[in-house]
Length: 269
Image (cartoon, rainbow, N blue to C red; front, side):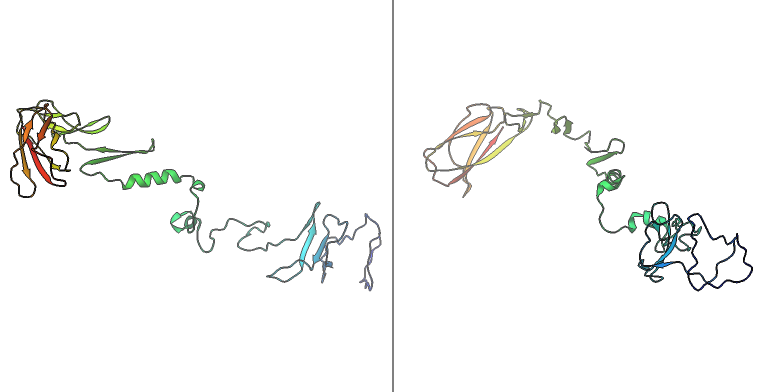
């Protein structure tokens, strides 16, 4: 060990020849030092080796970055101590605000713009169901029920107990007691005989060929009165009437009806 008590001016390079040698400053400061300036990373670097790489760009502070060597690579720190790295550990801290907004602003969906697929929203289906369920409104005739756990919406028709309507497995139905009201073969409502005057009406259109017409009235009785009249002047037309069944009458005219000529008939019973 050589102790030098005075200043040493070195005009050339000061080289430590031994691979194990080092320059021990004993915790003294280095003044006016410049880190080795290079345009490339040196080959065969040592852990802890430092350089200034002028090819590393920095649009904020200018080109040339300080770098140090780890066991596997060169590292060029970009982080400066700021509000984003308050403990100066090289990692961005969780900031209180981003673009001047707190985290709650970005969590609020009303502040979102653009499109987002439904599959990426964890509670989309539940939110949609709750939204639909919230706008359903009962009316005088329909009762809505939203089953949240079962994910179902049902709509029940309200029926007045005193009305002629009832519900069945097939849907709405008209109450038929079989005494005063019945159904014919065509599933038409009919009044039973003796329960009051019932009427069936219709038209007959001539085709120039037919003079006999079978009319299905569905009144379930032969006790019927039949009236036929001209559609133009409403005058009664004399026609032969046969009550062939309880639901059918046969009208026979004297000759074939003129093509396109219209007659009206009324069956009451």
